[in-house]
Length: 376
Image (cartoon, rainbow, N blue to C red; front, side):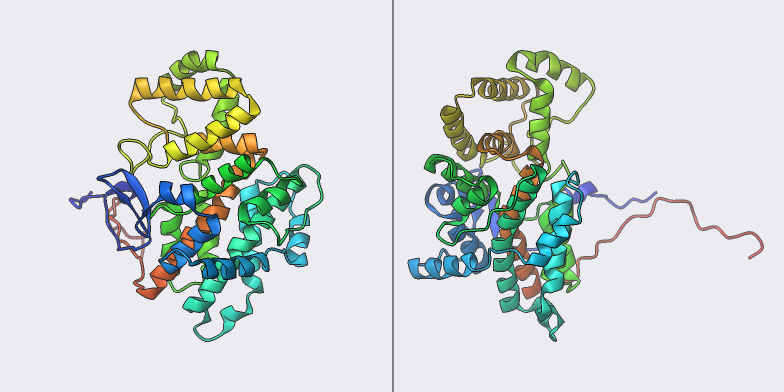
């Protein structure tokens, strides 16, 4: 054993600085480059938020128009990517499919082979925009394949959120529903040194390439203790069934010491600051749909759990039901998270490369003492 203090999960350990985001403890507000995320969600298109994360400032109208034109020109999937998807079983988890496709996109990038091309800021910025444009098309194709439907090509006359929904469903929901989706993308875009972002920075610190960092981040995001939580929330809802079953279900779950997904957060101690904005967006969809049963289940589980444990919902709790009401399959929820968080991941990859130090923590050994092979 050792006397060294161990910080399991790196809890409370500050490993680097970042100018990309922070949680303001005084206001319990998540800030992107200094802007409260709820203000960005209320006023900005998602494209402007992506630009902010990469460049440090919100775009001017001309800069936004130029960026939108660039992004829209990159939406179409390479035929080789569509062919790759056809080789993957339809019952594979969508996270595995998206991870594999992103790895292939990296293999297509010939600029990686240039001297210094792996960590060139301008090249990485172009790669970030490329992934930002490609991922909605990719995620939409994955959902449609699961349903036995043909892909729908992207449109260059629609903004990011509208085009994403068009490619997935072949029609546009109400403007209010499109806006709910935009809000969710803004809220999921960035959150400091979370597990997937830190994974991306570890990979980037080896001077590996941006695609590899994103692939690693996708692997971390798949876990239900991180990005997979929004998917897990809906599995819980399906298991519970109705508001009337919440109390007995929760009795059993707590007795079995089950982790209740969608509640609690390591950073927020007084509730996730993003939840009120996403909850308001969810209420728009609940009112449009008239789904009183889902609303009752949502409200009852939240009330019961907070009363019993004093632990509040995180962003995954309202986003899961919102994505279901928009029409997404539950297994697609975490790929939607990828499409949003790729903006934050790539911003961190570029920040890491700009002032790099290899991330290589130490460990405390607690195995058997030194021993030797007999006869050696």
